[in-house]
Length: 258
Image (spheres, rainbow, N blue to C red):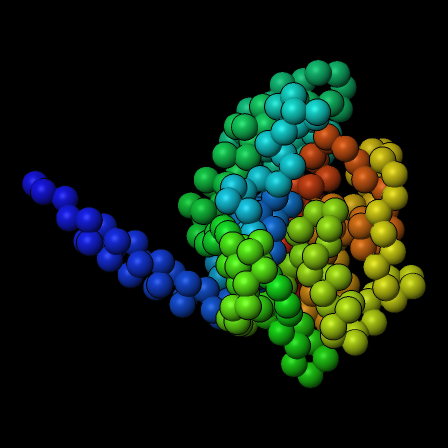
């Protein structure tokens, strides 16, 4: 059977158009498809929530792909191992409370299981602004990453969500936008982004769970973004806190959405 180039193009355009239109109104919109964002989305989708992730890069996975200093192994602590087990990511004991996993297997498996659970992931789309109504964040303003990189004057589109989750890591991009443009006071000690502190895994791994919460009406922090916003240290190539943070935010949002 012959293949027609135009039919190939039509199939892609028609399918993507339907997928994007369906993503314009959702329960939860997550910015950033790192381990925390995907984990959060997975647990939301498992409970039947309509959830979408927007990732500005071509690939998902955030910093997990590279493990530590490009050695593609990751460490998780004991209490996070059960999340890897649920996803079907293999792990092995290094010492008590230290488990190792292959970072490539971890990212690819978490992504696959999330998509199969119902999560829609759009790569190469950037959140350049937030939508605010009645002093509450209730959506995102989106544009192609290529437009952003090329600094082109091309207007964006808007999507609506009951809740928005910033899972953009160290940069805390969505919270920065909200702080700068919304006029809302953040739920931090200073009312503003407090900034990330130097690496201290023991403290950071506990703090990231406490800091994964609502930072402004309708806006949650997740993953390393949480410590960057609330003033916690970074944790380096241990990823248990990322997974636990994503699950915690999902559980909090499920309560709010029911």
